[in-house]
Length: 111
Image (cartoon, rainbow, N blue to C red; front, top):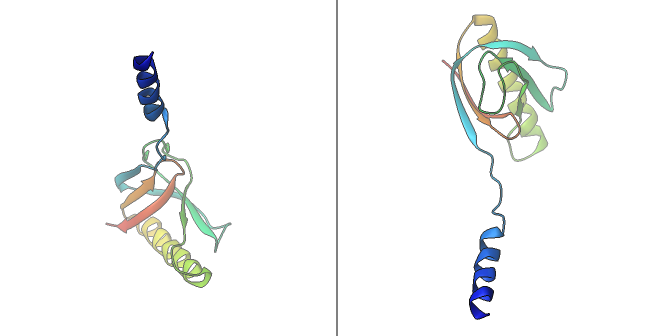
């Protein structure tokens, strides 16, 4: 009986779920195929020609502003919007870090 309680206790410890963390996927040498500015200045959405983990090629990826307050977040979204347009208009490739769970971009580089 003591053994079965011990096994149950150990099983209960392993059954507790750990917090789920998003996995960041790197995407290199991608090309922007579409820009959706409708949601500006809250976020900028765009599509690329490559998959990013669970985010399929051609699926909208979103950049949400980063910053300490709403003004900084808005300015950050505008800066990334400018970079997205520059990369698309210039035919430049980009590197991205993408949150696999939400398809939100965490790193944006023009190469």
